[in-house]
Image (cartoon, rainbow, N blue to C red; front, side, top):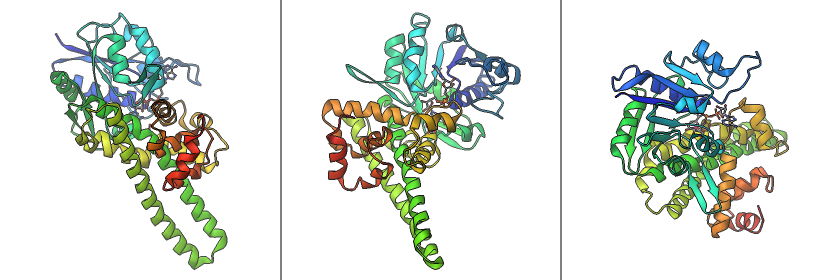
Length: 383
Ligand SMILES: NC(=O)C1=CN([C@@H]2O[C@H](COP(=O)(O)OP(=O)(O)OC[C@H]3O[C@@H](n4cnc5c(N)ncnc54)[C@H](O)[C@@H]3O)[C@@H](O)[C@H]2O)C=CC1
Ligand SMILES: O=C(CO)COP(=O)(O)O
């Protein structure tokens, strides 16, 4: 029997994932050509339903305009009917919606179904943190791998060379099937046996990207203020110096962030491997998201506004329905840190959370070097 794939989600990355998969299911005889894609239905300004437009034009005009998905991608607004008959489920929704989606699918999934999560995020429950792959496997009773990496969706949509990492726990055969389903000459996928490590990387780098975005504008502000105080020649020197300092500082934030990512991952899951941080899901995803992701973009706007417009407002204004993951993840991670008495060991994560809720100004991100001040400001509060 042929493998049948459904993509649960249809945002920016969800649509690109469907395109990648659809290009392979028509090519590989072990897969049914048709790829169903569950769409959270919405009305477009034209009055038409998004699913109707996707099925008529073969394009997700809202979340991935200008890119053909493949004629074998079929949009379905009903999640139960979308997964019917599928034995391979690809979950790719903003993490805050995953619990609701899973609940709708209880009892609708065959026992031998394999899942993979492309979702970067975690849930925090009374019992403690729960990774999204665990939420899926526990709620639906299926094995669930993960796929994470340096994967800005719009670049992969344009078929620019990228890499990704599949993380699996026991089922190597399933991981190989996912590698086959996603891999193309421009999208190179490898598998590692470290599902928690891969998923923690994808989740935590979004917090560091918020820090990097804030920083970007702090340097712009430094450069602009030099303008008012110095003569022309001095401005030029100040500009070059400012840029130089900006790169060093951004690199410092990435380094501090990576250390916190490794430490936090290992404190939660001692089995996480060091080598995972050197895969695409680790340092490469950290770099690309800090340089070009949506978390970085919105944090940049937040710093420019000096915190006068909230992250929620800026997300709505700048992302046209796409969702940020970093702000919510910073809050969720902060809950874990606070619950376990770890706040002072994670000044970057804690400071990003404090800034994102308006308790600290954006400039606090460059005061991380003064760990006493960062700890004092975040450690005593009831954030
Ligand atoms: N976009 C990117 O470049 C990448 C995203 N990711 C991750 O993939 C996951 C999904 O992100 P994207 O596909 O980019 O989504 P997105 O942020 O572009 O789109 C938001 C999606 O959420 C849906 N939605 C809105 N309200 C909803 C509700 N109440 N219930 C269920 N769905 C609702 C929208 O219809 C839309 O499909 C996230 O965890 C993200 O971090 C991972 C790699 C790259
Ligand atoms: O995960 C991503 C790239 O790998 C996308 O990051 P953003 O959500 O910040 O755009």
